[in-house]
Image (cartoon, rainbow, N blue to C red; front, side, top):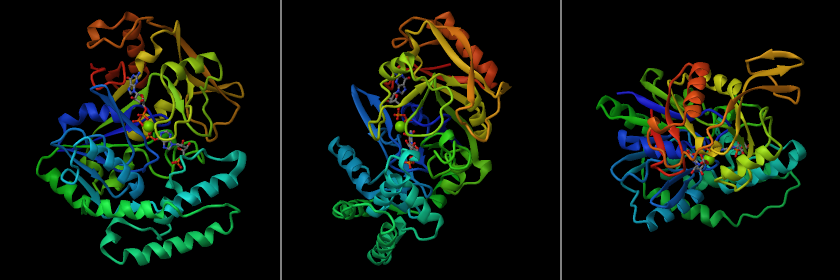
Length: 418
Ligand code: GDP
Ligand code: IMO
Ligand code: MG
């Protein structure tokens, strides 16, 4: 068996959580392999909305095993809150959620350092979710980090040493802070202790040998990748498919399908360049209709038209084999739908991602007629208006990969498989 990887092709919030939830019945195991509680993955079913931060989106299908693997940075405090909510719904997770001993822990001073660093950046701040992601990955690569496996070793000693180091660092920032969240952190640590803490790389490779099927759920999006995103306005992990191998300890040949998720338009939350951004009424319409407010921070998301230059770049980096277009219904009332097919830089046209996406990069749009029909009740491609069929054909011709799923609403049921 192979591992299928599902990931975001834009700037995050493409609807990954929903699609993972829909695909989960086809797999035995669902993993989260990078990122941390900066992620907010929304699932809707039975008139309920659930937002997951650390926990894989397979968690609502009882018989499935979910794993948080080594590439993730785990916040015990956020984790406890998520567990409390799920337990109140009668879901016992200690059986079907495993955690890698090699996953790094976010401690309260990581979050404080994140906030202090952002405050010091002033106008050029990244717009981080302030969940401590950057400082935790810095400690990981700087070889100072605290890991889940340390819970069984001299945890308190290691924690105090790391905290002390952070407090030294905080002296260089003129930033006021308090450590009141420490108590919640230690409560979260006790919750983690209840879970199966294993070397998930061994577990996953054995499961593969046994013929079990695995779906790996990416967080953030390709344009937020630490190497290939719009640096420095990125997150601190490799969000691309290659990150699934290092984030789980599986060899490249074990990867099967690469399912790329994109919205029928584009959004971005936080700072950084966004060539097809709409700063006008059309942008406001996309935000209102698409309810584009962050799942983790509640911030309004910046909105713009679909950007094929960025999308093609993402597809190249990930080796996408199947596409899933979400939030198609958000475009239902638009007379004209625009798609950026090239960038104009100093009068020259290019379809490649430039080193710097500064204000001199102007999108060149192709216009298509809108379908002007309510798609939310549609459940088969035979019911597609002609304009939507043409839009999908146009995208498939440009992207050279089939669109397999089309989202027509936030609910689990509102998806069409082509
Ligand atoms: P993720 O981070 O990629 O999992 O995406 P988020 O959950 O942060 O944001 C996606 C939002 O769009 C959520 O509120 C979803 O419920 C919603 N959503 C997902 N797919 C669709 C769709 O096809 N149509 C509409 N209208 N909403 C969708
Ligand atoms: P999901 O998994 C959208 C953005 C932040 C900020 C930048 C760095 O829900 O798609 P960080 O907290 O990582 O230091 O923030 O990345 N960002 C996201 N934007 N969706 C996400 O996750 C994001 N995770 C981080 O807004 O611009
Ligand atoms: Mg999200």
